[in-house]
Amino acid sequence: MIVTGFILGIVLGFIFQRGRFCVTGAFRDVWLSKSTRWLNAFLLAIAVQAVLVQFLTATGVINPSAPQLAIAAVAGGSFLFGIGIVLSGGCATGTYYRSGEGLIGSWIALGLYAFSAAAMKYGVGANFTETARNNTVDATTIHETLGISAWVPVILFSGLVAYLLIRQSRRPHNPVAGLAPKKTGVAHVLFEKRWTPNATAVLVGAIAALAYPRSEATGRNAGLGITTPSANVVQYLVTGQADLIDWGVAFVLGIIPGSYIAAKASGEFRLRAPDARTAVRSVFGGIIMGVGAALAGGCTIGNSLVQTALFSWQGWIAFGFTFLGVGAAAHFFITNNSGTRTSSVPTAGVPRGLVQIQ
Figure 1 (spheres, rainbow, N blue to C red):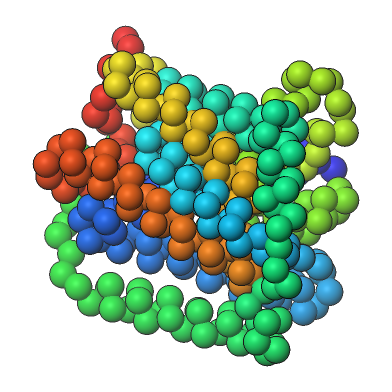
Figure 2: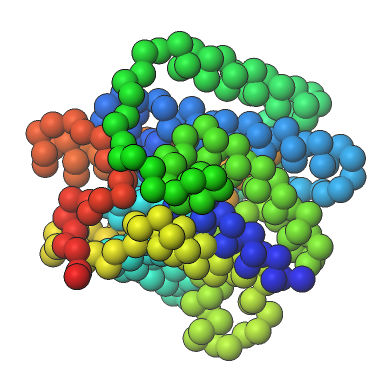
């Protein structure tokens, strides 16, 4: 039943909001402040998912597949996507969950992201996208290319992530000041306590793996994805084509309600309007995100989280070029404009460039 997609979307939207999980911030922090705290957490989410997905595959529960590598489309599209998410102030999931928090700039970026992805998949850009995506090489996964067991990259990568986390834990950490708790027990943990990046990553990775059997049960042989389901929502609204509404669409439709529940319960929901400059960036960022993700065959979830856990060439090339795109955009649109290198990790307050609506 596709309703499981909606439920999983609500749960993940809640986790994204409470854990402040956004790949844009993870990549951007490396370039701007040399911080790998959130990048390591994102790698942990990939590792958790990789172990669970490989176990489910080995036991015959699921049968995931990786696409043929369209190297030019993946590299170029991912680089564009990296630029777009910096302009938008969030990746696909970040834009979704911040929409649930009341950020009107994210509403703008999200709508244009879905619209431009639909245009590239079903509309004026469909022929170009199809031609680019069909220009492939004979390669799907790294372990198939090397002729080794799928467990080899899973174990090696998990070991690398463990090493990075251990090294990170040995660094001195400055304590974060906070207000005295107003809630107790489960309510304190769910709605008030600061969630750590690593705890959030474990939850995201586990749910990403759980998505496979739930999605396959409805006939959709794929894991989490944001771009195609978002494009399908737009296409359905225009054409009324009912077969576009599948598990993936139900999933993305659940993210915003889940984020809203988390933000409202934790006192972080505010309607916040962007200033003119931020609004313009949201427009262009959303469009570039949709175009790039359509060409690349996925976003930071579909490629950089899900396909990387399958150790597909598409996933890891997309990861690398998205990272480079974020770096380029951070240099031109953040460092050059501000003259300083500051972290842009979102907080519960009113971000720069936003006006809170009372």
